[in-house]
Image (cartoon, rainbow, N blue to C red; front, side, top):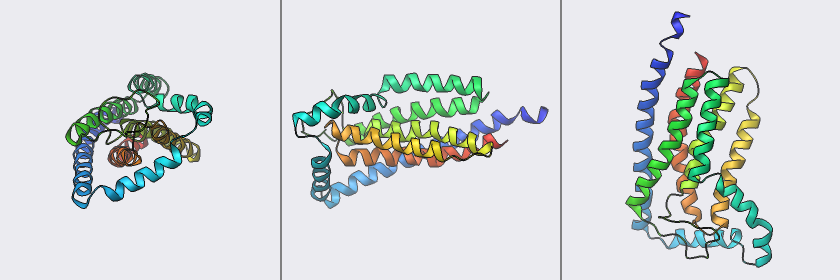
Length: 226
């Protein structure tokens, strides 16, 4: 039993170092992408943005009526208030059910990092939102999508923890992987469908969230195996 006491203290410094590295790399990568696009020229990227928007964004009243409530529900999962409630709920669940402070810390830190870093990066780049009719209210700048970042970096962490627990107990992690990918994709698509983000905004948010997961999930997995 005594050998297990230092484990949380060994987890925290490593996780914080990885988090800091991920945050710096995330900001640098997105800034490099944005300024490279400006240097190359925005025309090719806007061309593909518009083509994808023409496919996803509804152009008839009938389509609005059919899918708008579903899109609004899906996109609400990436909102600050809903994701905050989910962060607190899953953190408590991990503490009570898995008896893991590490899981709880990873979830809460992922939630906080995604929103804080998204705000910082948007202030640097200040890309305006699409000129399409916005089907939901959306404020602030456009790149990278906060909903896409929270879906990948925060919800991705929750599904990664679920997958880690299944792997530790020698069960397949197919289900959490499939459900996680599906949710992440649907939240991103919902933002384009609602006219509040360019597809490249979603891609930028996914890249940022993926960098976060690549640095932090291995530490969480290491902690789970102790």
